[in-house]
Image 1 (cartoon, rainbow, N blue to C red):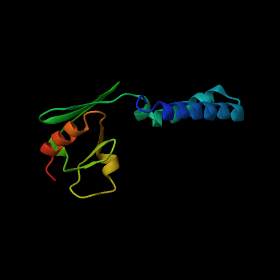
Image 2: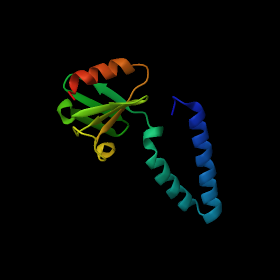
Image 3: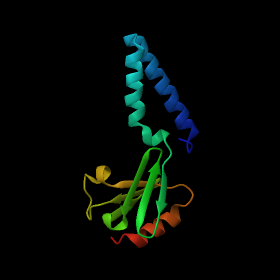
Length: 123
């Protein structure tokens, strides 16, 4: 959310308009709050900060009320893009990678993270 203030502001304005429209349509605070819970809950990765810790034997992903620890042996391949690295449990590309893999986002430390992960996962 903090990386792109323009996109975040536009998203918040859109959500405000969406929830206003839901309230206007249904005239119910309960339905509006229920809708907001589901929509914001589905966007939790955008609103909640996540921290990635790369250790010698494991990857640790933490967020408020969330912690995931995976050994490097759980990953068999990885794919680098401009925003992060998708760590996949499959050796070959699969449609399940987005559901079973872990997407590690990086900002200023891209080269260090890519080099470290390359040393841990042999493709």
